[in-house]
Length: 296
Length: 296
Image 1 (cartoon, each protein chain N blue to C red):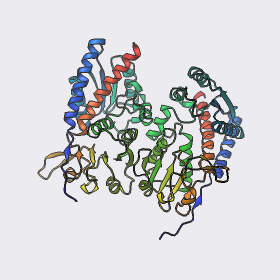
Image 2 (cartoon, rainbow over the protein chains, first blue to last red):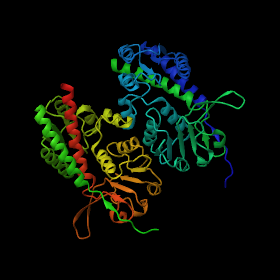
Image 3 (cartoon, each protein chain N blue to C red):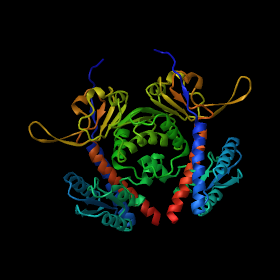
Image 4 (spheres, rainbow over the protein chains, first blue to last red):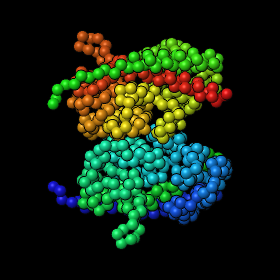
């Protein structure tokens, strides 16, 4: 009865490449028919090394699909007002169709007013109140935050009909857990959302056909927590030093233990990460298309 | 082990009266200090008898707390454009601080564009995208839909600390189930949301410390579904004809079966219903206060 099953790896890299290719061909088509090139502004304040890697990667991908990338690297000492002024300028710049503020911001800055200053129609990260409301109400015409959108697309590839499945989302952040739960609910899943105050996370996980983990706690989810045959989406990216002194990335799920129990799982790296960036490009293209519709 | 426990009734009527009294005294204070009287516009299209009862009741309560009530009873034949024009007029009317469109609308009208036409700062029913986003992100400065707000206030009276409790919300509507789940999550509950596609609702209910039911299916929840000692909030109001031919209101929970199992339960009528109206008055007062802050 407890014979291990063959766990299939969900290849996020391949999925992202296909998605990116599709965006690139649409960008080329858009340029040909309208002369407009989608433009994405990325703002990075300070010198957080992880953020720098993310931002560099986003810029590279933006160029790869033929979009224009506008990098704003601001010093650690940037004030709240300076950042707000920049966002107002970008809001009014017709060459910019998407604006992304790389989080976390340095501690002296208050992120919420900054995020809320972004025009909802340029909020390609889906973090403004308006876009959060759109997802919550099940309206799919706003911008969905890139990570939960990527998770949903990966899931839908593996399980074309999510209706009636039990899903557990571990982690309840505004960027990931909450919109993820709302997207799954809109697809007909029965959704539970667990978090730091949850008393029986393991037990809840054991009942979940779909398990999505975004906690920032390395290898939190043990093999024994996973329902046999469940589909596991691991959003975590944690840096650890192995016994041999090497840097290694691990997820929020104990990957080795999940093998033989989960039917499908996203590896870390190569799972959700690449798809998140593709979703950002997809949202930026979509922002540009909406802008063109608006002015024509 | 299975000895029945004493189930306490949650007296929504008493709670609502206290809340209404508090609103009334704040309205009087506001008039004295600013000369401004909160004004609530209620729009009813057509002749649905249940809606007429609700609207009449709202008007009565509005007057009772010293607010001005502006009733707009429109004929069944009202067009989408006529209704939108009225909302635009009310949006611009400085005497109106809150606007409520009684749902459901007649079938030939498309409710969503009508609801979304209401200015978020006059949307005392909390149904616009902006206010939905506020609740979803855990910002408590928007307008929370009246029924889930009422349920939360009743719950908080009975259980001052909700953190870590398992809550099941049955019903996933934009008006009730979704914002309810978000409010409970913001309070630290572990939240599951079940609905028409859920395969194991009874089993999920048996694990819930808090059970909130808003399905419109009379007496759907059986006694055997309820965890011993759970707090049950029954949002349903269903009209049935008894064997003796009398009209009777029943909830979505089998009340008789719940007695002896639940630790606390809201009766129907006299539970959630009265609190919903008090929350509407509370939201209208709050809209007026925000408006005054804005113009002063």
